[in-house]
Image (cartoon, rainbow, N blue to C red; front, side, top):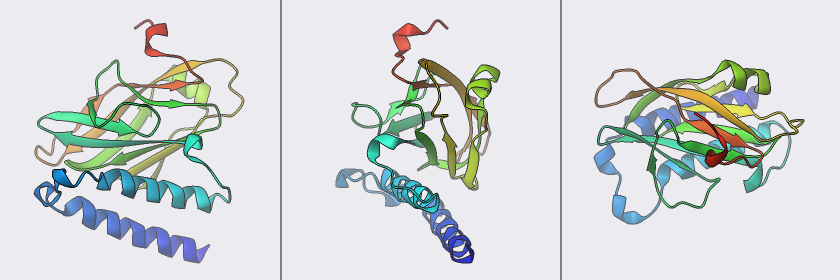
Length: 185
């Protein structure tokens, strides 16, 4: 257990160093999403600490970035390529019951302060997200006993590096195959 805490501390330091570097140091031409790689590695370490083996389909990793005045996201759970703007109608992850959901603060963000689910989503989930790496990685596990599709509404509370001002946006998560066309907002 002590080794896990030491490794977690080392990872926190590494991610703080990554977060502190200038965005201009990242080369957009290399075609490699360094934030998604870092988020995937951290998610894998977390899941290994839980004592299980999990495949790509057992976790949803959403990387958040701030660029040109907008919060962007990319996730490993859908077929679109690249980052999209987070809007009220955005579905940031498509998951199944029992899956883990991870949010990672990537380039342009100094921190993600909170992942805050609305009351209905909290009733479904029963637990609140855990701040695994302070202000950098948030995690929650969807209950495995959900028997009907659900659309979970939540807020992302974040601070862009360029402004230092806290902002709140409210996208959604689809659990069990419900699409955005099935919701009524």
